[in-house]
Length: 90
Image (cartoon, rainbow, N blue to C red; front, side, top):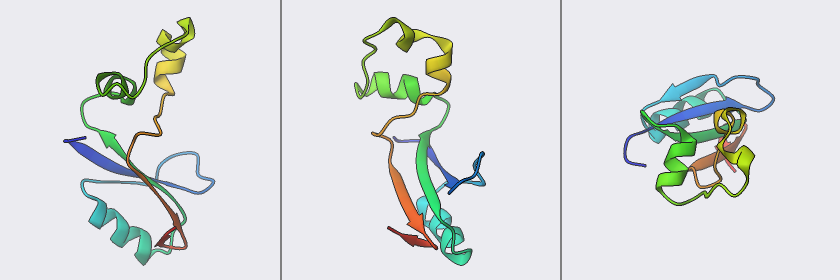
């Protein structure tokens, strides 16, 4: 992903709690607050579904793979992501 942001989603949280333009800033904040959760990189100006199709990380194989409900909740294991426990990358 060339243009990306990093989104932090705390363990057990319903929504994300922070968005950063670089991993270093995100990790400083996570460590400072001894947070647990996941930091995930998302492409800017493009949905993850479209990004995964363009990168050939995903190929729709079933009809529902092209439906709004599926596209709107799509994530990819190919996204850059990091797990944290008590502020440390685990």
